[in-house]
Amino acid sequence: MNICGIELKSNYAVLVVLKDKEFIDLKIKKIVLGDDEKQDSIRTFCNEFLLFLEKNEIEKIYIKKRAKKGTFAGGANTFKIEALIQLNPICEVNLISAQTISSFEKKNTVTFPENLKKYQEQAYLTLLSSL
Image 1: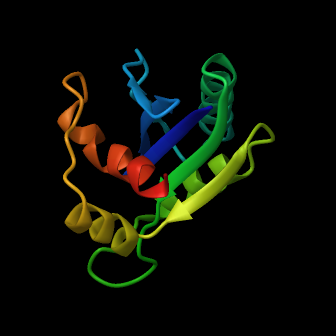
Image 2: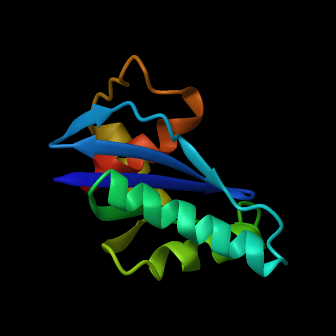
Image 3: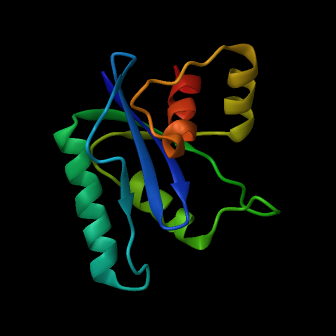
């Protein structure tokens, strides 16, 4: 089973894929939403994301949840990206709270794969905490 972990940052989605619990080092590591006020940019993001899901045969998606208010609140773009991801017709989408990820990290020793980029670590932890 191929599953995808996502962390949303400003105007892009950081992606990590596990196949049967093994990290897959993919060429595409993030998908960027250009100008969020232009319909063409939104469509481009959607098309790139759907192509990514199909090409990598993703069956489930886990997104690191962002706060809706307060100091660490997610920006408007991240909520727009999250909605676009949740509307995909290909696979199931689940949200994982930061507290769940933190708790998992405290209870387990996590070894990051050699090819994992530093900016992908939270997406990877999101996946691990969902298993």
